[in-house]
Length: 124
Image 1 (tube, one colour):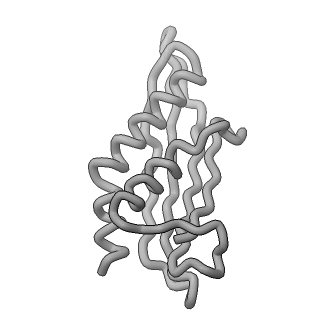
Image 2 (cartoon, rainbow, N blue to C red):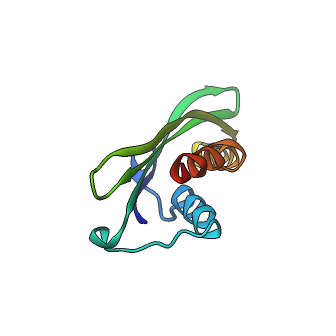
């Protein structure tokens, strides 16, 4: 499998790729192997995540994290699975920590629902 990933906080690249790492670990534990050469891969996984600033309520800063995940066949570019985990809300005392909270909740959602669905779609 070939993985391409873009993860941002408020439109600025993040230092660590939490969402991509979570998905990669899940798929690796399910028996998938990854390559950095797309030509050698059977499947392409594309992950695009970003957080956006929401309202400030008193001293609580609200942030929304969204992740778009697509899996397609490299050979014929046919989409196998696509989903958007949309506007997962995070709260904290500043925007940076609020964004991290939103990403943590998004990762929980991946574990509980999205990743098992994705694996099922890939294995069909």
